[in-house]
Image (cartoon, rainbow, N blue to C red; front, side):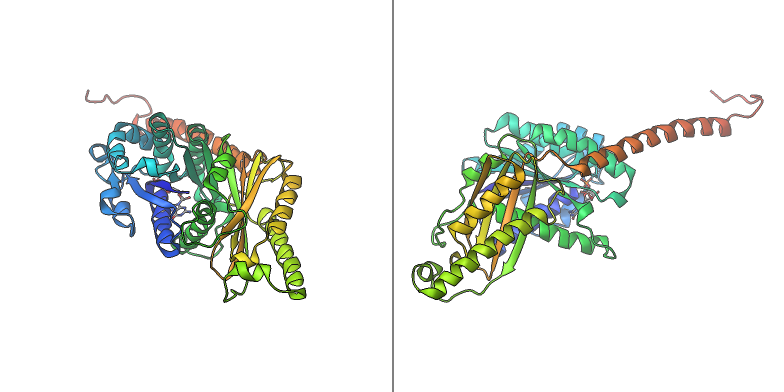
Length: 390
Ligand code: GDP
């Protein structure tokens, strides 16, 4: 499906920037427009692929291009005040050509954390197409203020979007890596997973034809109904055959039989690996309200039976009656299973995030009060013999 992507804040901008690169590399056709919004000039200048005229600096009168320093209330205020500047960039998007908006932000900081929900609310008021969010949760080692920001932004963002796709940095950071190096890999993972998912509904002319290709309406219907979504992903390398995959599927005798069974088994095990492996937001898959299974790869390595079995298995595991599935024909030497689980409810990570956020909030409050008392004690002389000037 075709998206207008708007990255809010540093993480949001960087991720959309990577999406543009992915789109150019793979010709997936998912990024119809890409915009980055920030209060920090340096972050906008660091982007590589988003066009200059689509980089919007907001809050200049308030923070002079220096960012909001992890103050997400200020981030939200500035977004509200300068929404017309953001709209100015959105006006150049041919909205009749897009299927949805995707607002991307890291939820632990200030600009994206505060601004993304404001923008989502604004977009929903003006446009009839869906507005999705892609929210990145901070690592648990980032500290209390980031967790508090994320927990508050999360509540607001979910309310303002048609569906919030979540990626949790905490379960993806790798020990020993520098933060920047770590983010590069993490961002690649984000872009790959969501790229395959949204790319599935965007099979163009001249592409291979699958047996039951996923349509963008199936992605939209899986996301409809709101709530939180997570994505599972697993791949296996395969050999690409020389002839067009379609032909080999209808020819051949005994070998073909073996092949078919092998293909089906590969698909079913990839579906299990994707659903039971690391999700973008770890959660219990049981109770997910809707799901979409996308099997991507060369058509000769995809078959209806495998996808049907995978779909049934997902129905059993989630208990959902709304599990959709289909092909995404791709001429690449691998088969990938990408699973969108939408309306997930059993997410211990969110409960933990909220708990830590409440503790951080209480601590911040206590420290603030204590610091007022401490300053008072320091500045005032013990016997109150001195008078201030005025
Ligand atoms: P903002 O510019 O004020 O919106 O804040 P940032 O986007 O810099 O940071 C917000 C949060 O996003 C941080 O707490 C990190 O958890 C996360 N973050 C920052 N940069 C990246 C990135 O490149 N990739 C990912 N996945 N997360 C990031």
